[in-house]
Image (tube, rainbow, N blue to C red; front, top):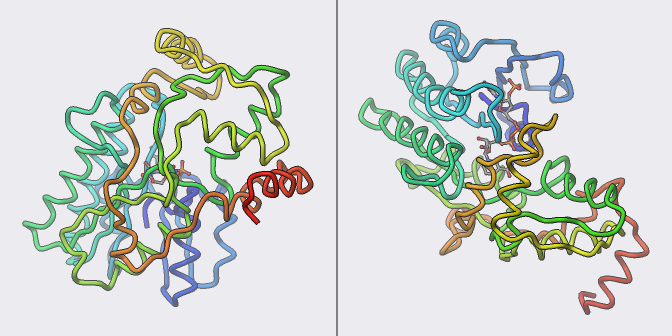
Length: 311
Ligand SMILES: NC(=O)c1ccc[n+]([C@@H]2O[C@H](COP(=O)([O-])OP(=O)(O)OC[C@H]3O[C@@H](n4cnc5c(N)ncnc54)[C@H](OP(=O)(O)O)[C@@H]3O)[C@@H](O)[C@H]2O)c1
């Protein structure tokens, strides 16, 4: 697996191991990813996956490959292309060279050549590279998740942290951006189901949770559940852009112009492809306590559920 050490990758690796598979995870920094070594049938290997010869040698002997590498921001110009477009090309080449027949690939909802952000444009280029493998005899399946939530995510947890650090009013860019958050374990189970399901060959699946939210509604909800309710100041378009322009130069790049552009595209689905993959979707509400971990305040959460009539 490439990209198996990240948030989705770790959950996916756990699901593969649980179902009896033996895995090899390629990483650029084994030292930083040691947490996954606890799995008994998992090997974590340092490898430069951007080197064709290294990649081909590492994939030798594998029966299938999972491609899940991705970045939200570039450190250097060209990073999006290298990780989202060129790396999938390399992976297809390495699969063909090693006569590996099966390839699963993680893209993103909204990926399109004419998308407004480089993130989404390069994700589309990656999908094209993966589908080009079909002509070479590969059985490929692409997955396009909306924003993914779950234990250790960097979306729900990041907003919970930011809200906790905000004294009174939380300035929110792109407040009307739309998402259908999907549970990480649902994505993982769907991908593992697809591995051996021939009907998924050549297909692309859009993965969404059961409910759509605006970013503003999501942030309010996270505030309520984590006990960090704040007034939300919904920034207009001009101020949202200004916030991105300023924040992209700050350490950590919490919000960039490319993120701003990605959020102009609703990250929602028309139908329910998870059902086609044998998955009953979990709601954010059903998993939020586990996700928020240290942020949660049980008493407030209980009060909120009661007030909202959710019990
Ligand atoms: N999380 C979401 O809400 C979400 C939504 C839609 C789509 N996706 C897609 O799902 C996939 C997994 O996302 P995630 O949230 O799990 O990301 P993540 O936690 O940031 O993990 C990123 C993974 O990509 C690898 N990676 C990062 N930069 C790389 C580079 N320059 N070269 C090679 N590998 C690199 C990392 O491997 P090492 O550091 O170990 O080398 C790591 O395993 C990505 O393709 C992402 O675009 C995620």
